[in-house]
Amino acid sequence: MNLRFSLIAASLLCLVSFALTVLWAPLGAHFVPEERRTTNGERRTTNDQPLSSFVVRRSSLGPTLEPNDPCFHKLPSSPCYPNEQWNFPRIALPGAWITTTGSADVIVAVIDTGVDRNHPDLAGKLVAGWDFLNQTTDPSPRANEGPVAGYGTAIAGVVAAATDNGIGVAGVSWNAKIMPLKAFRRNEYAVPVGLTTRTLTETLAFARRNQAKVILMPFALTHLSPEQQQALEDSLAEAHNQGVLLVASVGEGTGNVPTWPAAAPNVLGVTATRVLTDGREIRLSGTNTGAYVSVAAPGAIIPTTYWDAGPGSTYFAGSGTDFAAAHVAGLAALIWSVNPTLSPDQVRQIIIQSADKIGDEPYEQGRNPFYGYGRINARRALDLTPHYLQFSPTHLTFDLLGGVVTPASQTIVNRMTSAAT
Image 1 (cartoon, helix red, strand yellow):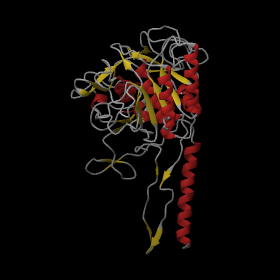
Image 2: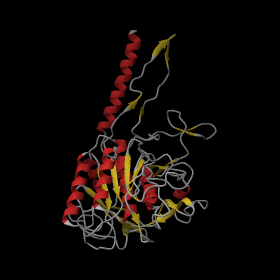
Image 3: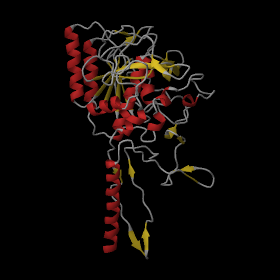
């Protein structure tokens, strides 16, 4: 009995020691598994559990994790070909995925034209939403709802398309859930039509009541009356105060005139970037500028999921600040996957603090009106995120049977990080 107690105590001390090591490790530390191979070449982690079909690579920038989605690799058989998901390596997502591929506990509400629940890259990824146009529980896009009714499906795919499933595209957060909230239609230029302040405040209230952690608003409104602006700000403040991170695109075509909701307090306003042939990354032409721009993200020819009245579930590549904002929403979901105890302000600060300073314009006091605090860097953001340990199982028991410790070994997992760690 004493020996068994000693073994239990020893295992608990080791567990505590490991926990303290992770918690007190310097920011930027990586806990990367040793990769092993069986005699037939099958890759396994150190706990001898088979890996998924993703590939763990090592480079001068550290280990990366690459999913098998064809659009990620520019395969000729890809439905996105000749386009590829250049955007994810640009923001160091493969390196970030080594730490976490996201948690199903994090819900991202997408306020747009609805989401195709039958899309093979989104099926099973949706939680209950609402159609505010038709007042129904099914926020799927419909053929009579404009020429780009699938726009919300495209935005949702960037955030959290099913990843490493061998089809289509990857998403920023592999496992996050999407809450589809249909609030308006879009015209042939993808401009929102019929969005009222009342509908917007109702969608915000629905999202916060139903445990959304991130609310993504991929649209930019102008010419709000003082009353409309106040009503919107009050609703946004209520969501923020209840622990929700608010993300919005800054839009295009209005110059330095502020747009809403990006210009509201507590909202991350996102602009878009593109890459030149020489490898430099600059602001996408026509995007708005100003003091309300918080960060930038890729926004040119972004492969993603789509819905069309003809073929139904399909894929396409979109451009604009709306697609850039979807990257930021997905990154917030990854950060909360690592540490669900963080406040929205802490998540916001991590995203801002970890951003890369790009472009030729000077950053006065850390920011400028073109890129905000810079273009997001997912790997650095997760490096700056303090880990929250939640072990499973919570205790280990070893017995001494016939002079042999049984079992010889056991495995503990911090379920807030990815399989690769």
